[in-house]
Image 1 (cartoon, rainbow, N blue to C red):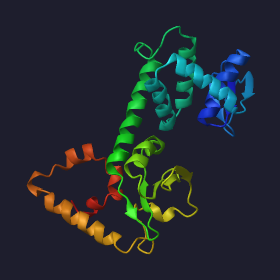
Image 2: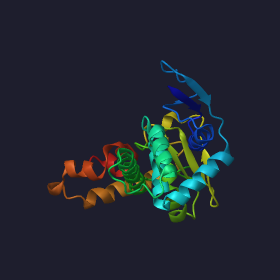
Image 3: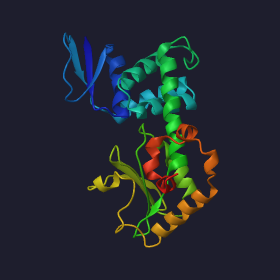
Image 4: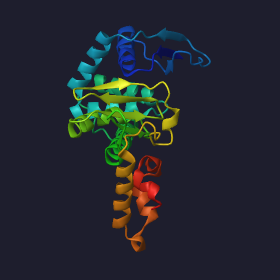
Length: 256
């Protein structure tokens, strides 16, 4: 069995594709650093991530595939599903070797898998844009904790920087313990040293702006006033508003 080790980054995966073609040896297994080796390894290659190599591979893929399909590949990577890197490796290899685009070859299991996973991640991106609720912190920064099923937060940056371009904000993924801070010019990736208190989905009272709790109470009152209890449909509500987002929504703390 031929095994390649790499750093589990997207650039590292693209470099893996480059090395495979350069060596004319294609891995049967992709491993991260520190992962135990399987039995019967006949060859082990350690991939050193190289931006030049990864850029060359990506350029070839952009020539072979449409912009939307290249976006699908990134969606699959951000899914963080087991073996998604192996799926992408096979897809990229088929795309590079084919004389025409493989995007509509629905008889290929890898093509179908990439589309299905990409759609799931795309839906999670849409949910984030729907259900993010900012809370105003004492320093004036608008803060929103999230915990998406997939690592879809990077896919929402263009939307939030465009829609909320006139205010400083911090979107933070409490599940993956990183986020993006927007300073009115650009969004920068950040991590917080002490983020355990964010798991409940709400800023501590001492970190919250004085008028934030008032606005949250007003929003809950507005939401409650619009609700027609006789027409409540919890099953349909869970279908359109996944329960994993509820703890981050002030209106769901109203008991409705």
